Image (cartoon, rainbow, N blue to C red; front, side):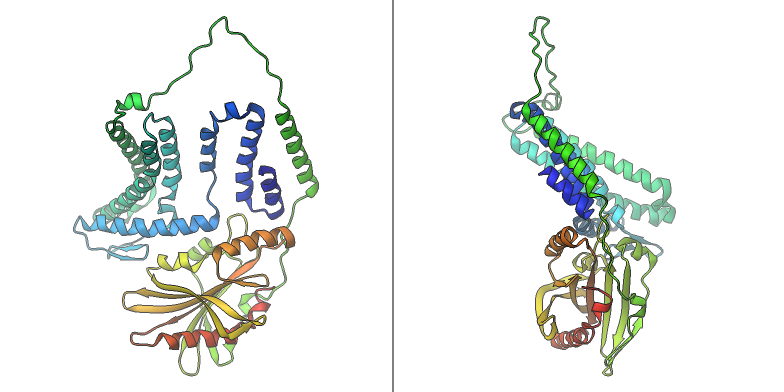
Length: 440
């Protein structure tokens, strides 16, 4: 299984698969060498290696966005305890004189994996009931979220009294170290409490004591073990995989020819557009190849925003960011999410299927349609998108693709049917143009 993953990594350059396959190969080789009786004594510590591998980009982005929102909300609650006036919009904390953005680096994920690793080690060595060990490990998640929220709240308080310098440089990094050490202390305190409850009570020193094997007696019989056939077969398989990968050579993505979005027409039937520019800080986070973002208006003064993000290669961490992740980061709440087929928009002989989102922020509302164009496919499911990305990398040497998003404001008292009609009419007008800019 590990060697299959290795070849998939070599063929697709999706390095996350190669990372996991290395751990699987290592565990398989050790099992071949030691046999099950010895391997079962070390398989739990070996599982810790999976914590060293970063999450897949799409899962990392989704989890990070959720943690940013949670940490921002709890952090603002903490700031208000000090009677400080503060306003939260998405993951931006507005203190009046200063605005603090809870960026991806402050989401808490940088705490989460190290603390989960510590929790895993602590649970492994803890001499208590299984339910206690489970609590120790799983509690590392809420501890991380709460302590990171506390850190964000403290930054807000210190900025209010000592200025923006309190949120930058050495002090900012030092606060992160202090909070992580405090999180570790909370984990130890939790272990002390668990050691004191239940029928298996014992002091923490005993509950977390390490048992070392006794020294071998001087008259112990020494037996020299021959290498088992399993490890020899595994070694031959690994060597064959190495030779095969060398002969395979370096696969390169096919980058199809296409028109640049700088040439995208700003007149589409009755719709006239004005092109916008995305700030560099957001472009760095999106890591896209090309994009168009424009506001279109028709003769009836109806307005639709178009955003298309194109990736010529989705590998090495680069990939499409789903609006379901990004929209809440701007302070918008997803009020309704459905998948719809637009009967009036035919693409490739079939109605265009879209994700339909109604999003709200205070009294403002917007209707959003979005879908993914992955070669000749039009997709709405983020996970199926990832499967086809892997399949096309293997069979076509291509990982290009794009996100297409249409947005229109819904004024108070407006009928949603009118907003649906606007987006449908614009989708019908522009869908035939996209192939020149997003090749099949």
